[in-house]
Length: 458
Image (tube, rainbow, N blue to C red; front, side):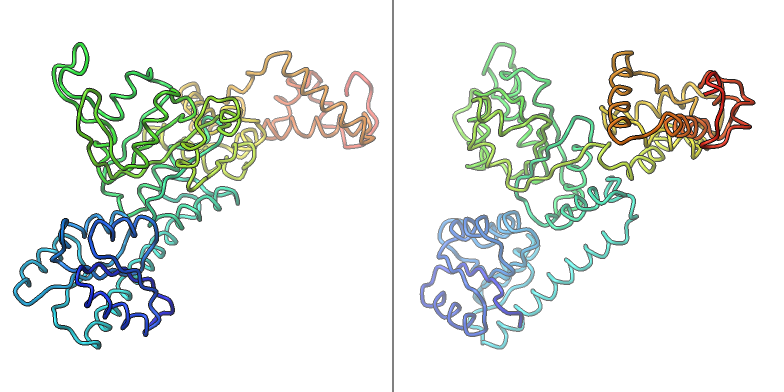
């Protein structure tokens, strides 16, 4: 039996509860025992258990009704129902609700340990199978996330580790880095993959309207509300609610969101009753929330409630290994089934761009190149990269010259490297390179690195 297996016991009979605790503790289980389903669910929400024993006949919420809530609180938790002989039909009903198995009272020690052993083996096998399925995916893509760079592989690894959790996640990073893609990967990898994924941009909707979108409203709550409407928290069900640009959330609405996350319930606008919600919340922002807290624009307590599992998504310029597979992915996405390809020279151009708009900018550029090019092969000249202003170009040159002067690079070395780079960017087409450089093509054919050349040919 594994050491220190964490077992949750829910049993209202104090004598049986004590007996179970004693027997399991002798077998090296770490036991948490509660007398009601409500207290058991609270314990499962506060800690992660490996297995649960739950009596069917409990005061208040029944053991059968508690199965779903326990598995929601602690993903993949095998729940074993405990029942008397007259309640076997109820136990079968509980298994249909998601329980792993049931045992009947009175039970002996060997039977109890055998059922627990099977439950733990089943749970371990499910986790192993999920891990193997994840590892079998392409190294470049995991649930839609392109992960060629070490930084993105780390993010994929974290997604896999938190797959079974329902804790809130906060994604940070510049606009266009793919935070929503990552949020969908977290959803698809977890136990609620078949449940809804509901997304909303908090900066796109005014605060008073956003409240009704999130929490819903009852009929007559405001002018024009001729029918009640469920909010997105309810629409997400047991799935995922993705709150994009959470840093732009109206300050007054932040306290209501905090209450919803703490109490796991929402009150529709104009309503008098709260509604229980079970969706996992993933938030994203491109702003500095800690700075917003210091300036009084964001609640500190809400930040800590959202930031249970933080994931920072680096800018595209910081993970250039992802640019070629991303470009190929976008090419396939927008080519309409036609066989279009990027030449190595074109890919080289893409990897040297700063990508201020990140993956979103890269996708837009690939789509534009496909429209503007008539060739099956996308060449460097098909990529409309000349978007920098004269001031931007001047700034780049100033930084280049400053670095060259400080490191002692000669004019000849600068010229050699610049010419070599232009030739590379044009795919070795020296005629085209010569036009870009403003020199005669014969200059490039006879020029060798480090060789002396007339000033007008440099």
